[in-house]
Figure 1: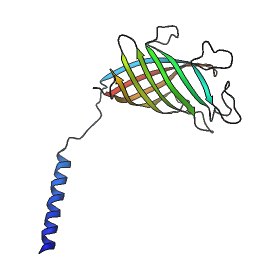
Figure 2 (figure 1 turned 45 degrees about the horizontal axis):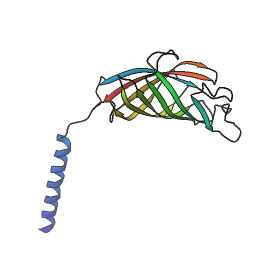
Figure 3 (figure 1 turned 180 degrees about the vertical axis):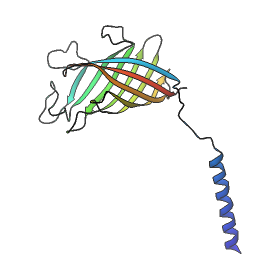
Figure 4 (figure 1 turned 60 degrees about the horizontal axis):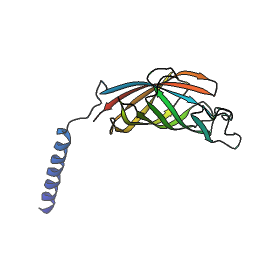
Length: 187
């Protein structure tokens, strides 16, 4: 008798739990972003001679590398920190609306890829706060996505995707990225 009551109680418990789960609303990513920004950031790598203009620097390199040139092959093992201007167009001389601040590291020996962790920190009257990004960047692809993992100010707790596209580059000295930020969680 006690076993029957225990089984009945267990079945009732499972039935209640399953009805709570099935009645909950399913969360889905909205089809359209709640906010979208297209911005450019400009990176000038320190090469031992351009300290006044450099916006990034190699802070760690493999044993065979140095801190003024990127390691060969594929820059593997280099860690670069940056404080790059962000503009609303691809002109380096345009007034910046903020700074891209963070780091990237070259993480594969076989092919050219990097891993990014950075923030867009805004200092304009139109935008306040920061958007935080993290993820792998397969540099050789035309477009690639990084995760938007949070933010502050106007971008409090935001989530989304940033599509990167290399807009310009000059050897290892300069690159410009077009960043299409699509936010799907806006508060």
